[in-house]
Each structure stands twice: as structure tokens, then as C-alpha cells.
Image (tube, rainbow, N blue to C red; front, side):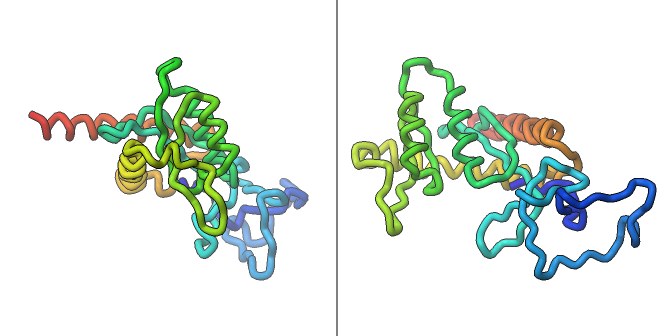
Length: 216
């Protein structure tokens, strides 16, 4: 989750019409009351960054105008090898994961991809298999049946993938603290995506320096 450079006050109804010749009362710092107002991405959009969408990490978290950043890391050293920035919506993570998996080099050689429980859906698992990618997805068996069968989870490689996939969290922490991605200072998917890619490249350089120093 990458918070957009957009004010919550400017998240307005798409049907709202304003006259450019008549400035709104209160100007940029006008009083806006959101209590009892239902604001949804389907009916509202930001006046400062129209592509950003309301998103929250959990049911209890505050919804913020945001983007979603996705990365693919190799599981040996934690280097980032592919990135995506998408608009925030419920299927964005799985759709981006399939796009990234399609670009994994290797041809006919089967590779593995570690993922969290949120990716444990039959559609996603089947899409990875069609791409010759073994889905090392954490099983979600809370009141349901996992889409990942025992033929996959019984192998030690599945456990290793689940352990090593957490390396990407180090990138997200670094990007928000060091690279300034907690709240970006650019607007629009192209510009924010460029900044996200630049942060991933910088992280790779910093990590390779540390790895080289550790083995020197």
C-alpha cells in the first residue's frame, strides 16, 4: 500500500459539478464533514489524483487514497527482480502476481512462487499451473478447503518458499522509511510507478553492496 499525494477532502462525487469561475467557499482549506457520508470508489474520485483509490489494509484500518505496489523477489538473496504498481482494488494483488509470473524467465523449466494465504484461490492456483509455475501458496483452511493440494505442500520446497517469501517485506519497510514511499510526492500511475521502480532498483544496489561486504 502506497499512500497517494491526494487530500481526503478532494475525494468527491463524480457527479458533483463545480464552476471554475466561482471558487468554492472556504478555498483549499474549506470545512468538509464526512460523517454519515458513504464514499466509494465507484461513485467518488480524487480531484487531485483521479487514478488513486480508497484502500485500507484491514477492516479496522482507516481507508486512504492509495496505490498498490507489487514485487517479485528471488528467494536466495531477497533481490527484487520485477515490480508493478496498480490501482487499488480487491483483485489487484492476484492479477499483478499472474502478470509478473508470466514474465519469469525459464521457458519450459518449472519454477516455484511463494505467496501468502490471500492468494489461495482456485482460479489463481490454476493460472499459475498454466504458466508452468508451482504455486507455493500458504493454505487457507479457515472454514474452507484450500486450493493447494497435498502434492505441493508435502515437499520441503514449499516450506522453504513460505519462509523465504517474507524477504520481500524487508523491501517494503526500506521503501517506506528510506525511499519515501510511505506517502509519495508524485501523482498519476505513470509517475508513481516510475518512483516505485526506482526505489526497487536502489534497494537492489544497497542489498548487493551489503551482500558483497558480508562475503568479502
